[in-house]
Image 1 (cartoon, one colour):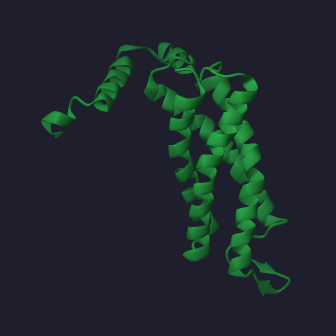
Image 2: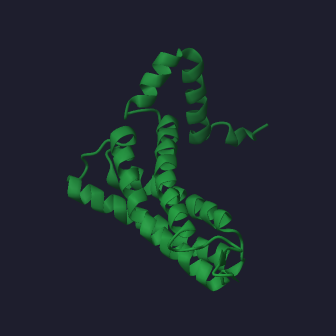
Image 3: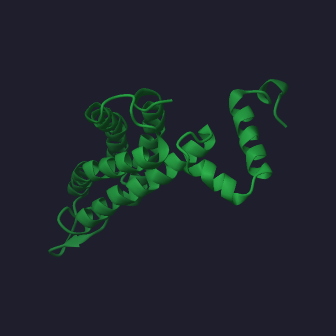
Length: 183
C-alpha cells in the first residue's frame, strides 16, 4: 500500500488515468489514440520505447555485423589461432559503436518524427541537429559504460551493450521531449 502522500503524485494520477482510458475503450479507440502524436504521455513513452527498439536493432545489428567481421569483439574469439586480446576487443567494441551511432540516430529521428513527437518547434535542420546532439549526450556516457563493463570488468559484449542502451534511453527521451519537439 502506498503511503497517503504517494497516492496523489502526478505520476500515479497519470498512470491511473491511463488505466481508466484503457478499461473504458475498445482496442480500435486505444489504437487510434496510440497512433496520434498527441497521445497520453504514457502512450507517448511507449511509442518512444518502440521507436527506440527499432533504432537499437539498427544500431546493435550494425555493431554485431562489425564485431563479427571487420572489428572482432566477441569475448574469447579466436583469430589466426590466438584468443582475441581483451584490450583490442574493447577497442573494437568502442569503434563498432561509434560507427553504428549515425545509423541508429537516423533511424531514431525518422521513427520519432513520424510516430512520436510533433516536429516544428525548430526548422528541420536545427531539429535534426539538436536530435543528434541529444543523442550524443546520451551516447558518450553509454560508451563510458561499455568501456567500464567490457574493458574494466571484463563482462561480455552483450552485457556492455545492454548498459549502453539503458544509459542512453533515460537521457534521450527527456531531452528530446522537452527541448526539441513541440509539447
